[in-house]
Each structure stands twice: as structure tokens, then as C-alpha cells.
Length: 274
Ligand SMILES: C[S@@+](CC[C@H](N)C(=O)[O-])C[C@H]1O[C@@H](n2cnc3c(N)ncnc32)[C@H](O)[C@@H]1O
Image 1 (cartoon, rainbow, N blue to C red):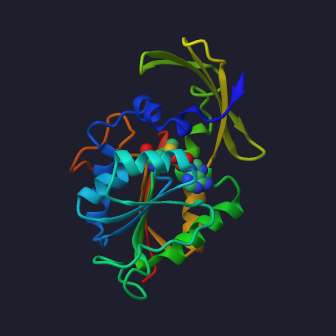
Image 2 (cartoon, rainbow, N blue to C red):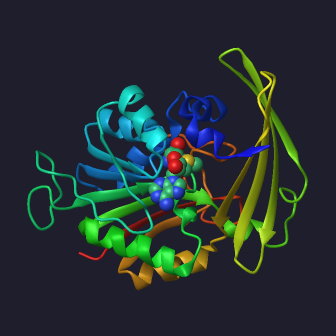
């Protein structure tokens, strides 16, 4: 058995496993940005394959996509061109939109972003409180006054008293470039670290050795998120469990939010003090 991250090392496989042909995540994000009047300069943190960043670019925004994975960035530059793609760690970064039209309204042309977006639980790669502080301090440094944070992630509160997603392996299969892949995924709660830990084992019918992959996400509770945001100068504009791009039923234009934070996804829009 070898270890690694099969999906982030193979972005094509990532898009095959998590297809978003209608660009729901990008459309939801653009809808939030418009609703709250965000300016054009946007930073997509944990941009992955770049499909959301490219959607925002096509909607007329000037986008920087940032990710830790060189494989993701290389794929994004080829398959979802338009945004500028850079390597950065969302737990501690210093990024600017760069010179050009549509720069943030902060301390000069190209100095700051109008919005930071962080989709599909990328924010939850901040495992510790210090890392969450690092993320929000970096966002604050990079945003113009009044700038937005738009994020979408798993909801830690879902796991309070529910274990339907935990401890039992789930199986998935997909075919990609003539090879059949099968994955076995198990989630467990690490209460001490307040993390959701995932073990995923991939097997393929091409004779290659199984690949075991370990990931973890912070189990962030809605009220905890409010507290972190407030302590970094953000005011929460919305915080709810849906509808969103990864809820059932999925978000569609004009949908009203539930107002609750009980289901397994969390959506937040917050504004930095002006
Ligand atoms: C679940 S994917 C989400 C990708 C994209 N936002 C989407 O919604 O399709 C998470 C991404 O976060 C990236 N990532 C993980 N840890 C990171 C970190 N510390 N800083 C920046 N990116 C990170 C991974 O490489 C991966 O591309």
C-alpha cells in the first residue's frame, strides 16, 4: 500500500469524482458577491482545479486562485485559464491582486482584494485555533475595508448527536481513462483535536498498489465561527446550512436560506469592518 493524495495529485480524477457541470459552486459564489456588492478583485483560496475561479473570471471578476498543491495549480492554468494561479498556504498568506483595472478599493491600485472565497471545506484545513487565526489575519491583511469573506464547508454541529456518516466504510466507484477505481472511505471524529478524520483507500483494476489517503477537517461549530470572525473584525451577514452548492436540494437562483445551522453544510458571508 502506498500513501498520498490521489485526488489532489490527479486533478482530472478530482473533477471526475466531484463533477460540477452546471458550475453550481461558482454561480452560488457569484450570487453572494453580487448580493453584497463586492468589487471585482477576488481571491479564491484552496482553488483546487480552478473551475470556480474561472467561473468568477468569466463573470467579469479579476481573480487570483491560490492552492498548496502544485498539481492542482498546473491543471488549473491549462484547463481553467483566466485567473492568475499562485501557490499559497491559506493558513498564513500575503497576496495582492496585482496592478490592473478593477483592483480593490483599499490602499491603492492592486493593493487589496474585494472578496476572499473559500469553497468546499478548504477553510477547515485550518485545524488549530492558531491556524484559524492565521487564516483570518491573512484575509484581513489582503482585503480592502468592507471586503467580503464567502465560505462554504462541512458543518461541525451536524456531528453533535449524529453518527450516520461516521465509522462505517462507504464505497464509491468511478471509471477514468479506461481504469476502474474503487474507494473505501471511513470518517471518524477525533474529539480531542476537534477534527473529522478521513481514511480513504483507493484500489484500481490496472494492477497498481492500493493507495491509502488520510485527511482531516476542523469540526468548526457555527457559534465558534461567529466568534473567530468577530475577533478579526468581521460582521456576519449570513450563516446557515443552505441551500448551497452541495446541499440537497441544491441552491438555485432566488432560493431563500433556511436560517438554521443544523444540516451537514455551513455557508457564511462576512464583511470586514470598513
Ligand atoms: C476539497 S478541495 C476544494 C477545491 C475547490 N475549492 C473546489 O471547491 O472545488 C480542497 C483544496 O484545498 C487545497 N488545500 C489544502 N490545504 C491547503 C492549504 N493549507 N492552503 C491552500 N490550499 C490548501 C487542496 O490542495 C485542494 O485543492
